[in-house]
Amino acid sequence: MTFDAFNVLVEELTSFLKFECFNLVRPQLEVKKIVAIVLYKFVHGLSLKHMSDIFDVGTYPIHKYVDIMCDVLSNKDKLFDKYIKIPIGNRLLHIIQQFEKLIGLSNRCGATDGTHISLVNRPNKRYIIASTNYYNQKRFHNIVLQTICDTHKLFWNICDGQPGRVHDGGQFKTSSLYHDLQT
Image (cartoon, rainbow, N blue to C red):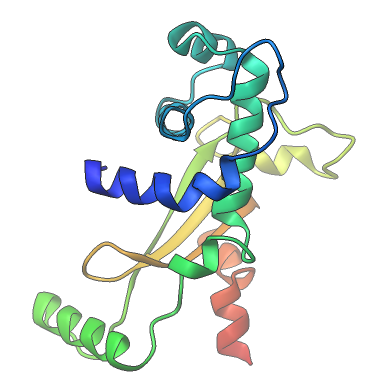
């Protein structure tokens, strides 16, 4: 991530991360530090205890900030729909032209792929009917993330949350894009 992209993210998240201190002993962290901590957690997948040791911040605030940022970035009423949009109009035509120039095939507007996001803990059987579905052929618990991007590597569709054993076709059938294409 570039420094400029980081600053844009900080600016976008500032209004969501400014709230009453939930710990009266320590003042609230700077928004830049909150964003840096959460991004570091996303990239490295470290435990809260390890993150606490690295950044000298309690585990509860880190957990709280991760929850808040995940909600803001994934909620369609917050930032998700501002940045993740199916291309239309001139943007769609530009993407189609770029794909034709890049790969020589016409009428292509995106590249799609899926990846497995490993889960730190096995899903709780109380909440998930078939937690074994989250255990994939590579022998770890995970969910599947499917994305579609344009030639500039900008995502315009994201679908996640299906168990790791779900085939790519099954993941696609649960996506909003599939639903939109059907209607």
